[in-house]
Image 1 (cartoon, rainbow, N blue to C red):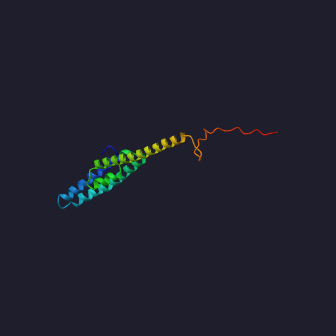
Image 2 (image 1 turned 90 degrees about the vertical axis):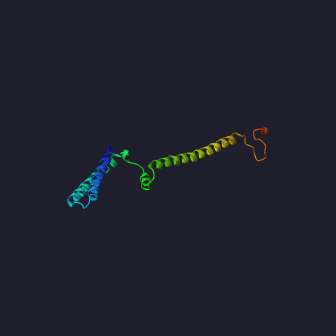
Image 3 (image 1 turned 30 degrees about the vertical axis):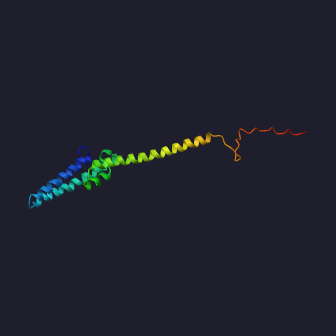
Amino acid sequence: MAATPVGKAVEDVLAVVTRAEAILASGPPSEDALVDEIDALVKALPRLREAAKETTAKDDVSATFPIGVLQHVDEGKDPVRFVVDGLLAVGEANDACKGKVNVFDAFHRALEEEMSKPRTPPGGEDASAKEEEPAPSPKR
């Protein structure tokens, strides 16, 4: 995780919190030791904020991921399952879209077929088969 500035800052904050937990778990806390760890935490949090701002400013995608993954993990579910579910949902959407494309393709073919047929007037005769009689010439 320490490959990014945010990862390093998170590791620093977690180290301070872990040390503070160890002090509390070891029995009645030494007030000075606990205050020192709280001071260290107060100093580490702004570094985390700065690292996050720098990452956001650089638009570093290596430190971003969908919030749904966090919610999935928070619910005690496997984050890999989140990815698998996402891929399956994309596949279903792709199938639906492909079905729509196929329907429009069939409609287009049927429309072209109808357009290629000769048109018939309402009387039922083919207009192109009807021979036109020459118009009488005007008499002078």
